[in-house]
Image (cartoon, rainbow, N blue to C red):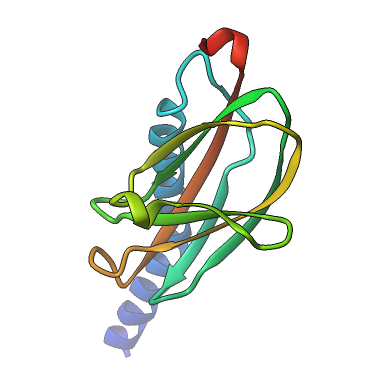
Length: 145
C-alpha cells in the first residue's frame, strides 16, 4: 500500500512540474529569439509558436507594410533547425528558407502592403518533434539604409 502511495505521489509531482518546465523552456527560447532582433529592428511583440511532430506544418498569418524592412527569425531548443516559407495571400511562394540552407533569419524590404502566410516546420534531419518559434521584427528603411 505504501509503495502504491509513493508511486501516485511521484506521478502527481511530475505532472505538476512538467508544465513549469515547458513554460520555462519556452521563456528561454523566446528570450534567445528576441535577442536576434537587434536595433534598428523592433520586435513585433507577437511570437508565432507551434509544437510540431514529424512533418507537421504550422501556418501563421501576418500583414507586412510598405516601406519597412523586415527580419524573420526562427528559434528552437538545442540544434533543431526550423524551415520557413513566406507566401502571398494567393499562396504564391515569395521565399523558402530550405532553398538557402535553412538560415535562422531573413531580412527583406517590402514594396507594397501584403497579407502573407508564413509556414514553418522542423527540419527532418535535426528533429522528430519539438517547438518552432518565429518572430518578426521591422524597421523603417531610413534607419537601415
